[in-house]
Image (cartoon, rainbow, N blue to C red; front, side, top):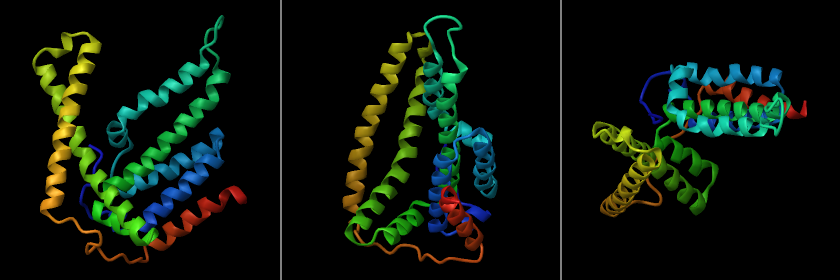
Length: 234
């Protein structure tokens, strides 16, 4: 599941602000270099954070598998033509490159999620956006980071329960309805429990967050992030 996993890897040791800067620089470069050659170079850069987090690309792809049907649909629909040859590679080329670019961005984001706790992310965001807006945004990110994996686990349990009851023999529309209905019920229940938990813990707008400090390992990553950000201007 795509969630934070404690560890002692190089990626875990980096400051969360450094990892956010690398993501931003990578996104700028990904949208600037859309050719196959440019995306090939970016592919190596996208695999580097996963390697630093000691995660394989296959494991990350499995965690991100729910996004792949949407990314695959764009080039397939764009390439369909009315009449022979029925599918145009030239028309599907640009959306296919765009979808691949999104996959690279998702890999970089996955490495961040694997190696950055919700508290570290909140501290980085509140440093980046000072004042009450930053506290509100940081709280929202922390809640999402903790809430989303739980909801995904609920949906997986609903699917497993349906399969155990021979639900796979039902029509596809009926299976989607069952899982969606169960998921929505769990969302309502989780939201009520979250609201009660926040009240019970007297959620603070200005909690004591981890102290952020840049180290020697952050310097080359920050330099690479700056180079990626400025690369479209070179």
